[in-house]
Length: 53
Image 1 (cartoon, one colour):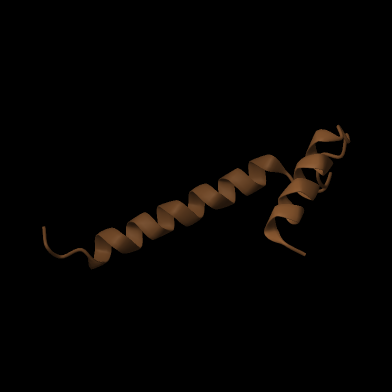
Image 2: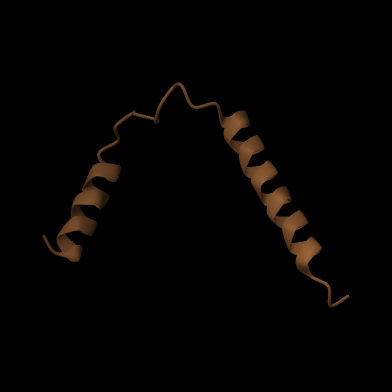
């Protein structure tokens, strides 16, 4: 299957107007909070190793 055919199939699927919106069990606040916590942890790690200041 070529990339062009795959892109066309994906575009047709997205344009078909299906009303499926993902899983109901995923909490957007938990996902956002987890992402924020991970980014803050990475920021903290980066500032601990940056001794050029």
